[in-house]
Image (tube, rainbow over all chains, first blue to last red; front, top):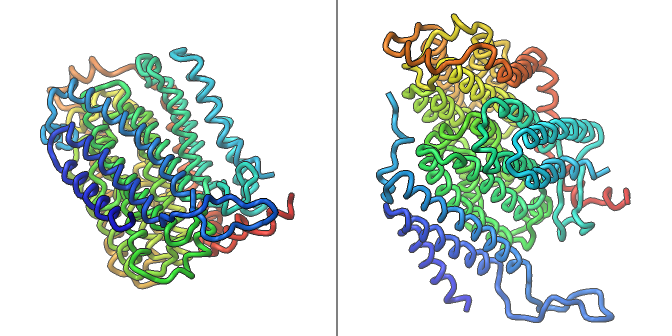
Length: 118
Length: 506
């Protein structure tokens, strides 16, 4: 499992960045979503995935016995997924509003705020 | 004892929730926000006083001891930042009375503003890396909403740019957190500082540092990650951009200082050089961008970038004097920059436009406003005895002491160019006559003096603080110097968070 995940993460990062470089609003959002997946999986993998007993202290002892699985990365990812979901939901609504008010879905067309207005 | 931290956080949270129940009630929400920021001002003043006299305050949330639970920590830097947040929040609250229209209030301007203040303070007070990520995201989503509220064409466009780059930055932040956790098995900042030195040195640590550099660099708008800032900060109403200009980039700078003094503790020459050259490039390109602009707010937006460079420069040099300078700079910059944005809003009210080519003659009609502008603008450019002079002086002196002549020269040149664009605003908006073809236009859009008076209250307040920092620079210098000392001795922070002292108190 640990050998496959890095390749998958690499592909996701590459795909996400590739999509962000497109000019279409929709591809931009899909790119951001994929990039979010990539970083969540990256967090999951690099915090050492182990297949072991749950981290519960048995009755009568005061310490965990090795090997035990670390539950924290999963908690972190869960939080990150929820937050990422919220941001992505906002971004999707935003591009919809953007498409309506700006009347374009081409990122190259939205340069008005970058221009010098003389 | 430790509950002081909680009070500062609870005020904006509870008031924010309270005002959710009174959705769209204009007066009530305005006054509750004013009261909430005022209470925060008092609470954060007490917090700072406690921290100065009693040392670092730590709150272990839910009673879980340090490396396992989430610690909220108020050291001097955090306490100062929270106090300034409250000051700017209060100024913006007064200003918002005359600027924010009922349309925006109906769509929840004030609750979101409360949550923004809440999350900014949280980011300053947390002692846990992942918790910092959560505060950052809360801050982001609130700022997204505030930026797009009103649905103007420019606003939507600016927000798309702002949202995209910030979501990308968040993924970098998350990846950096992953690496840190993989290396050390902890996310508590104090615990990280203890454990990282014993981790075998591999490329991974530098990689984590670079990831954090990118994540905070986007927030703080350093070169070459700053392009979103001038593209978006001039679009929302002035009350919002003023708060953004003062606080949001400085959260990034705060995170820089926290991480690169405590966790990545000047171990890698590469990172130090990276910081130094980024600082130089940030200053230089920011100020060049400002020189080309003719929109009041865009000039100020580019100046945020160039001033961030000075703060990063102080951090990169890393001596006690340099850090003192960086902290002094942050204090001075937040006050002055927010004030200049507020003044830009008042000038817009008087003349009808932000475009310097279309306006003029403000000095003739509103000399009092002109004086307030001069105090802030020349403080930004670094005229003695105003606050900016001392800030620049300390940073540059620190650079001379460590013989980093390259960056000192850049800093001095940038100082001159800052003066150039401040005099440009002065000449165009205040000094020259209104151009013939715009006289009618300006007359129809401008308002009588009486209606700008309430807007002048926060401007006057912030200009007063600028003057105070300038004239009584020594007391602020001492505070900044104490803070720098605390930052250079992470032991104090670590002992307070992990330490025995906390348990003894119980």
